[in-house]
Length: 134
Length: 102
Image (cartoon, rainbow over all chains, first blue to last red; front, side, top):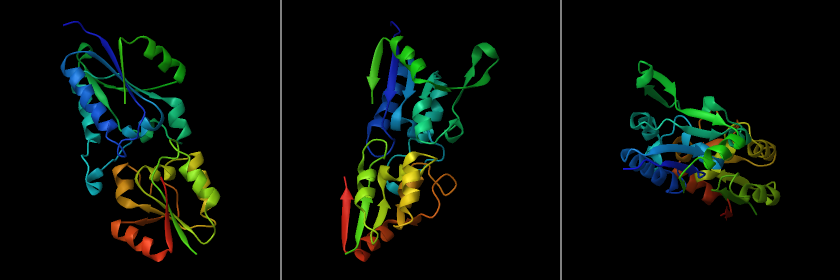
């Protein structure tokens, strides 16, 4: 099967609507079909990656820990727009650490999250075959 | 008359919080629920607006919504009273009216 470059653009916060959870489900499906998967988090989408989320008290599926499984599916291109973080008074230290193991580098643990400018993100968007928005 | 102003939208997605703060009179309180609680997180313009609003209004937030979103006393605005669902109901009875800025 031909491999395509898929970009999942996430712009909604995690718990107010079903978009964030649905996006993550589709990301995992794309990865299961061995596609070249990239994630972008823009605007309120950056809130999806905040540390210490625990939705047990609001009765919804607590899916934030699932992000940590992405590295095992070779999903390691996670781009967060710097401007969106800054506008919300946040930095990389506020986000959950997401890593992957590089088999070509003696299984070294590497960061999956990359903080990029909107200019860099614009270039990433142009490089894709398929754009999926959530 | 006292009003409980309820905000459930992210301040970066909707202008509900700004509009609420323009119209909230000194006797009224502000309760943040659902995605409204993001206004309390980090060093943002929304947090600054709320800090100013605290001079005139008690500010409440629904604890289960904070917990779900990874917001805690360590990374949120000071001086906010946290309530649980029972506390939410109690607030609606203590004020004459509730205004939900949808």
